Length: 621
Image (cartoon, rainbow, N blue to C red; front, side, top):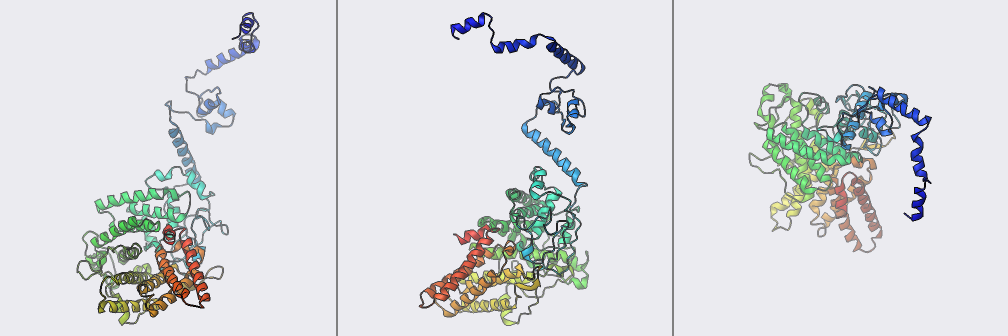
């Protein structure tokens, strides 16, 4: 300090700061304040830390009144007057307590606890009007055109919802009372993803998303029985439910759900291990493995998908689902304990699975096997890896399970062994006229069989000298594909939506695409050398492109992920034809037409890539 400043301070000329510090030390006002403070402390002797959190935060005097102190009551914030338990709490603990309080208040607003009930599915006239989150609406708050209620839907056995067909789903869950958008709902539900299973409302939300996509996953079940089991003493296994929730997050395209997809996958994998160790609900474990395989394939994680598809195939064989010999449930009545129901044929002779209770449960086992089969065969083609399910005549491994029917037929007890087997499909299609009276499930299994065989025969060409048997098999397969293709109904149905447009049955569309890709793959080795093969490939590719062009943009989220592989085969056929035409003079118009067709396929791959990232990887290798 300079000498002059020191002398000034020491001589009695006090600084302003020192003056402010000494002013309150005397005078009547200061005295009255001290007396008031003394009286307050005498009246309210508080220990340190006893004040409420609100007064502490505002640094105010508190009388520690319960349930609310005088300061909080006076300021109309009694609901915020809280006390801690005297123990120091971390920021995480405080946040968890706040979340718990919010959850309690949310439950109070919701009323009685929500149980699983039949899910509200809208009445969709066409796949173009179907819901997928982030696009057309939200099942928690309804749609802008009808915010107060949901209509019932009619879900056809073939896949796409269609009007007019009966469906017993009932609207018993009124969700329009929840005036929250989905993002706010998930935020107010706290850290719901840390629980073993999601809260009821979120679980219902996820289930609704999945059930609208179940056909493209091959998950063919009786929905009413499945929903009834949710509140039963024997609910679906956590392995299956978490796989369903993972796919719901994937299909939702919601930033609030997508981050939790991996968590559901991890839980499903852990639950599968537990179920296998205890031999618990193994058919549901098969479903879970299939759903995880589809999820991995769709995301381009091909080896992971191949691993789970193979695991499902081996388990299906181990359970005997590949050799189900269906009894005649019409004559036996299908009652539990009847000779048909108690026979081992319902489980393929397996001693691991209990006998099916009725024809419906037996039918679901048949459909489960064909779900495994379709995934195994289709994705073996997509990955170029061997199939897991054998196709031979060995008594223990040959496939004898009857072709699948619709779930409605199984409900009526229509289970039989008619229709032949996988091994002799080609010879049957060649030798006898096709009846054309089959379910979409059966047509899909047969299309998958021909799709995989076409890829196998094509890849074997050039591996060695071609025998006469090779050409016999080639011709039979070509004929079988053509006959089955001509017998399938068109994908665009005669049913109209609310705008007067006819709808596309996406299940039939996938069957057509598999057979078109099978034809192209079968002739791919000869397209440059043989004029007939070239013309057939070009004709089929043009037909397939026209069908793709006919799709609505809202149909794409409901297409099977294998479409990426099928459309790749179509694009390759168009490119081969383009190469031939460019070498031919005066073919400018044809070249321009082929370029437009290629643009259609590329656009389709882009749209499919929204829900099937694998399609983008195939498009841009």
